[in-house]
Image 1 (cartoon, rainbow, N blue to C red):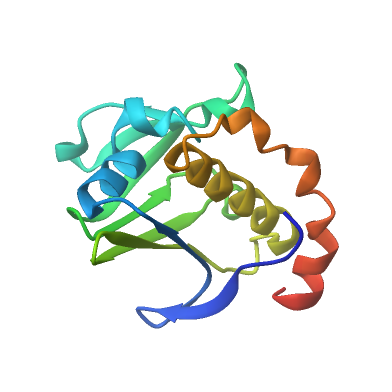
Image 2: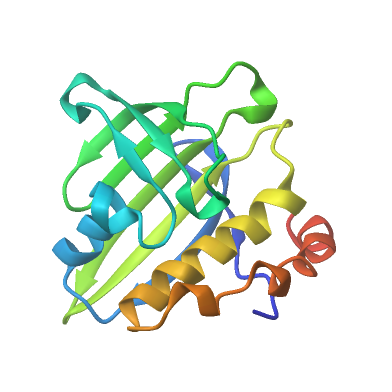
Length: 166
């Protein structure tokens, strides 16, 4: 990883930080990778609960064994093209809203992954973090070991995020 890939983008009238990744895979396969607990665990984390209730508990397993579970609200779920969730956190500094949109053309699926920007979102921290996780997802689809994606390669991006998109 050597560069910032995010851009600011308005979604539903609100400013987001957005990333795009493409996968040589059917849309249903990419949807499963970002929504099914067993598939998600390969690159980011897992969830428990009944999504039909509109709430699950998400835990970022890639953060280590002591990562706390986060109550998560499912705002929009339109398989296999759109998912919007937000962490039901105690305070604004720990809350985040993600909006995922998928499209497929000729066997290539594009994922737009976006985080709602608020005054409490530290762009210099979340930007490199999502670059890291999305590259882990790309590693899964590329048949590579996610351990090859090292967090230390993303830490230098923190200053770039503040300067370029912050």
